[in-house]
Image 1: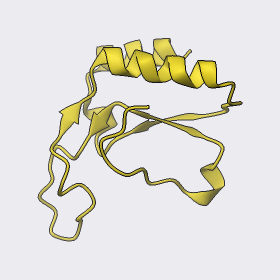
Image 2 (image 1 turned 45 degrees about the vertical axis):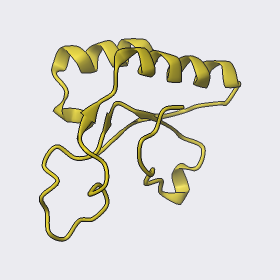
Image 3 (image 1 turned 90 degrees about the vertical axis):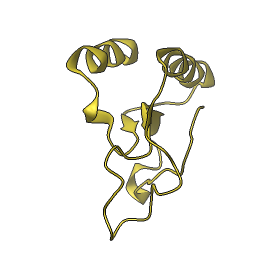
Amino acid sequence: MHFSCGIVRPPYEAGSCFLQVTSGCSHNKCRFCTFYKEAPFAVSPEREIREDLQEIRDSGWKVNRIFLQGADPFLLSYGRLKRIMDLIK
């Protein structure tokens, strides 16, 4: 799996999968937040997303939910998010 920074996973989501679609934070100027300071903002290439989904499928994990990972996954365009959702489906 491709991850450029840490994952924030609530304990009750231990069985969920995380798919990195962005890394870092597009704003990254909040004085109170230090979580993404070391990670420049980037959008994951579609090739990496496909590879990660293939790895999830091939692993045999029983996955009920897939969370889009990164500080700003919904910064992506509707078209890009729809392609990712189609790949997940």
